[in-house]
Image 1: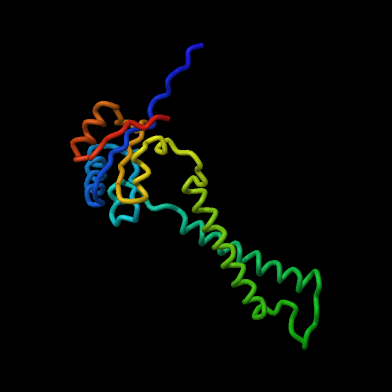
Image 2 (image 1 turned 180 degrees about the horizontal axis):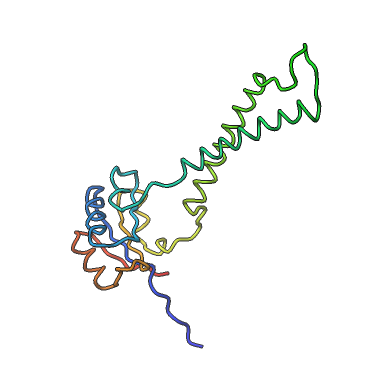
Length: 180
């Protein structure tokens, strides 16, 4: 059986400055490219908007995690004070909610924090020990002093030759094909 060659992951263009990367991402988005991502050694204001990324749902997940954590903390105390182990302390009612506040607060924080960590990992697709961009030798500079714009082959507008010409016209220092 003859091994079938895999299609490329996409193309990656290298830029010298953060501003050049943002301008290139804006032009690529305006040209109709949708499946692209930018890589830089530090956060760049405006890059997410230039790439066309939408706001994510992580803040909502953290809120839900905090509310669920608080409800679980309160419910656990309520159950143990009313049903499991009721104690009459100083004539107070079994459901003395003011004494439940510290534990409820801590469970709220714990639920929100755990949801934030695991939600962030899940939404980012981490851990990701392998990525096709690791095949590009110069991509190691993305954590030092270079800026990269990657357009994936799954993009509806992607054409290997036309996309390469487009990226070169944006002033890219180098355009590299990324194997699968």
